[in-house]
Structures are given as structure tokens and as C-alpha cells.
Length: 249
Image (tube, rainbow, N blue to C red; front, side, top):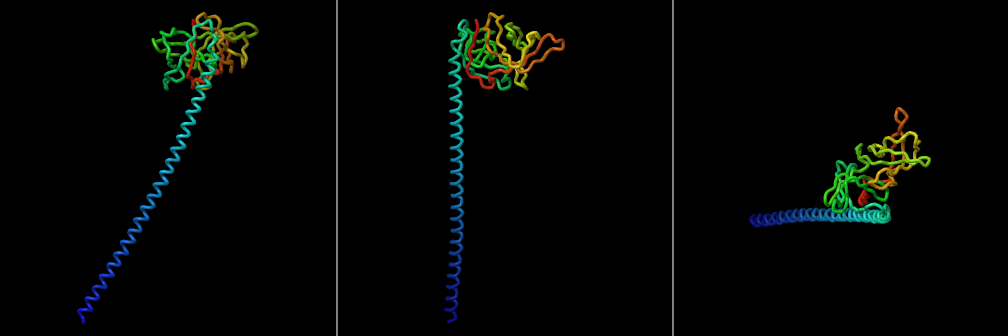
């Protein structure tokens, strides 16, 4: 009888242990299942978040591309309106193909060269006025020195009309801080005023006269009171040039 009782107690203990093990397994399974569900939930949320961000980025990118395209179309229309100007001169339509980031306001490269009739010294313009002049010519490309270049040797003659008389000066640099073009050696007798227009001179036979350069923003008289340095505001956005005309004899 004692043996049976011991055997029975042993069976009950084993059953109790099995129950405990089963309970532990169930608890662990529930924990693992809950953890897996949470991971899946987090993963889905992250996927939705990334998809939403990608969608926003894609919309922003498409919006930027559309805006750039609209600006290009607008620029091309304005360039088309310019094509009949300066009919007495050789005009070559060109596209900007390269700019050096380090010297962004100094030079740019266009896709036309000597085979297209371009020569050193030709002026480069767009619908807003004078941009620069041809500095170097290769067969298929040319380097343009911009008037935003702080090089005193750009040597483009310009004029100011005052009281039906022309007064002459020369482009001689760029104030990068104020974003103004400098004109040197204008006679003080010209009595320049803020807002006066400066254009290319009629003294040169190599390029057209009357090309708009800029409006007088500031006048600085020399210490002898004989001549002035003018600071001009150009209409050209030198950070955003894509299409140009090269003009010259």
C-alpha cells in the first residue's frame, strides 16, 4: 500500500512538472509571438514612413524638374525673340556646357568654336544684355570671360549718353560683395546719375554698339574730380546662364 502511494505521488509530481513546463512554454510562445508581432508592426510602419518619404522626395524632385524645364522654355523663348537683333553682325547661338565651380563668376565654356565662325574678342550676350567676351577659341568649343570676372583686362569699351553726347569708359572689374560691375575712366563732365544706362560703345568696329550692360548704381569720383568710376547693376543672373549668342564681325 505504501509503494502504491509513493508511485501515485510520483505520477502526480510528474504531471505537475509537465503542467508547469507547458505553462512556461505557452508563456514563452506568447512572449515570442507578441515580440514578433511588434517587430512586424514596426517594420510595416517604417516601410510606410520610407514609402511616404520617397513619395514626397519624388514629388519634390518632379516639381523641381518641371520648374527647371519651365525656366528653360522661358529662356529659349526670350532668346528666340533676340535672334533678329544685330543683323549686321555674325550671330552664333550657343549652349553653355561647362562652368568651373572654383571660378564660377569668371568663365564659362560654350559648345561653339572656330568651325562655327567664332573669334577671340567676340561679345557674348543673352536677352538680358552683355555677358562677356570670347577669351579662347578651340575648334568645337570656346571659353567666355564673364564681365563678372574681377579682371581689369577685360577691356570692353562702353558709353554713357548724357545731354545728347556720348562719354566713354571701359569695363574694369567686378565688386563681388555688392555684385556690381565697374566702369573706369568715365569723364566727370558726363555728370552720371544713378539709373543711367551704360551700353557698349560705338567706337569699336569689332562688336555691336548699344548692347545693354547695366544701370548706374553708384558713382565714385576720383580725388582730382576729373573722372568717375561707375558701379553698374546688370540684369544678367550670372549664376544661371544656359543659352547665349556670340556676336561679332
